[in-house]
Length: 605
Image (tube, rainbow, N blue to C red; front, side, top):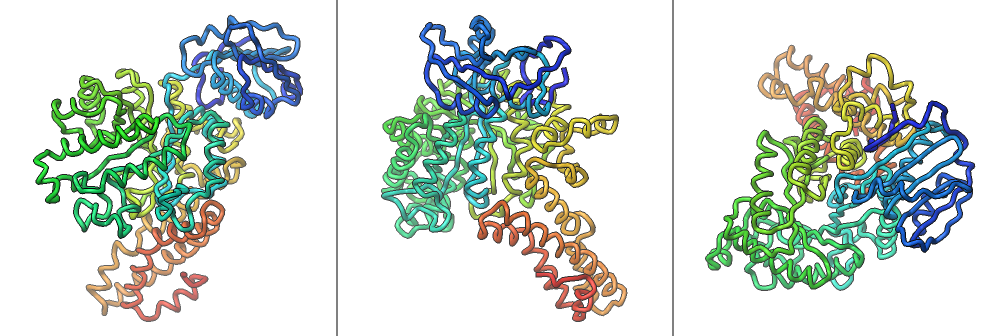
């Protein structure tokens, strides 16, 4: 059955050829063993009249059925023992939906909503038995440099639930509304207490669990820049890394963890980061300890873990700083720490992941995996994820989750290499690999060859009939970004995302792809008196910088809708600073470029 759903359901069975229509006008009953207003809200998005009844039959079955339909709670047993499972029946005269958890019923409602939207109000008669293969299916929100406006963040959290993502790791950095440590708040961009509470409530309302990420060892630029903490750096010239043996280091982090935990009273986990502490072991205090860098790392993590547990949270850390630790060193690591293994590519990715997963398991340490849907990829100037690498990495981790029996994967989504680095392409451009990862986490082995078409239909609203025919058989899942410019006219959902991708490509053509000026500017420096060279550079300036002006205006227009003004300025500067330097060099070589500017259009600014 050709359903345009994301994620693809586990089991779909036809109940006949006659379609089901008029569903939105049907009266339905929610019958719940425990009251949950979130389910009522979700049902009311579809049905005009919903009544709620609390059951006391001891079955533990959550159900939604059309009025007058007898309950068949045995259906729920089809998904017994499964994560977030549900059974959905659509027929010409009824809807039946059963689950053994509130989250399962919620995801069943989401599937029904996708069916109705995809079919423009009409759905096929079918039975769906569906469940998640991974218990934890996580997206990632990186708030270090450039990220969506607050209202867009709330929209994205709600949208994650459409794709059955149930966890969101948030790296707040200085955007949390710190209280006692209020000097850590960003002076303009930090959430207010009310905004933060609304964010957490939005996540809760959509069955998304928030895991706060508080860097506690490395990547501490926003903390160690403050005069009171500069002395805690491992070495003075590295602003981001903490010395674990320095007096005051643990006390500083303990105070920060107390505030982060208090701001997330319902979060089960607290992610401590602890990755990429590159200078660890180089200062005099570390050398005097007599410990290896790995042993120093584990000693400090154990202190952080003890504090985290005392705050009622389960500590998480990244794996990389203990990747080369000995078995004896790892044996000392606090067994309450969950280690998240992140490896984002390379021909040995799965082999290396298995080595560290097995080493940690042998030591009695719980593990999770981490892919990335947006990361460095040897391309810090990327304007959207390097998609062939990201698809492969997600698939590799899904295979590992099955073979290693992992409970979950955090699909990381980095906004920049580090907080003082150049931003990657905006968060909006990463929804494509993020929702592919969500589907694979729900159903390992879902049809990846049809994901491109299903995403264009579900996420961008392109008509299904527009995406059929022989030409679509030639496109691969990695063709999404290159297709957007030619499909832009048909996009009617998440249009800003499509316009952003189109704007990035219009920038890349003159800046990176089509003989950009900087690739031969050296000729002007070498041959300033050559008529041939000067004429050639004038011509390249005329075409290239005319297109760059237009790309910049287009980019500014789109970013004004997506980013706070100062973030929009930062992003524009990150993309155009280098071309403007090259232009300044050319102006030093050729003095009559103003004539070319007048011919090309508006001044480049």
